[in-house]
Image (tube, rainbow, N blue to C red; front, side, top):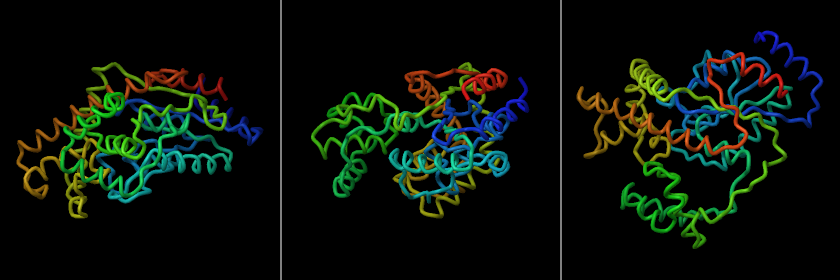
Length: 330
């Protein structure tokens, strides 16, 4: 079936769609699998994107986050991109709230939302909602922040393991935001975060077609390395330098993302250095760290995504199969 036929079919379908029938598409997969390319080539008609990436929400974090270009955003409208300053925090609760608002806006114009990104727990909580774990107060949050600064990432993760081994096994040592959140819950409630059960039924009777994109491991690793090469050629170091001039530091949530933290870990290793002071060998090492961290992250993403139910796993190159799947579902 041609994409043109599908687009015409969707237009007819939308014209008679009851507004109470709020369907959506979830399109996820590991970093560099090819989500953006598929969105622009296939979903550009009658769909709009709700960004489910925890880094692309930040302004001026463009290259390191592999943010959709202006051309790509003209091909298909994107929501929840460039909505925060780099020093601001963004939680899964923020994503659910803003994602709901974006979906309502999309439905109001007779289109379908496509939630797309690689932040796995955003998708899970968007479907099922948050657990009943309490929110910590500002005092507790500040205490935990200071504790993590004093102990460092490794020791903070070990502390989390001592109070909540289940959560520590799920949270990467470098994910200080989620480590902090788990410790905050324990201090606020006296219970581990993992003891609070997640809802098991979709929120608001959500009707979502869940498409997971995957490639062979070696192919994905090759694509990741090619993407990192492109990032450096497009000016990633200049982007980091500009952020440093804004006052970027390793404590910003945005700077803990792959593509940024590797630079800052070197630049702040002994005081604070400018990007221009990096030697060629340091740059080579940083580049390799970004590649390896991305490859390892892709593996963790797939582990998390594989735990989802009712996923249609597809190769992003197989547009015909994806077309038939979407048509039959709508």
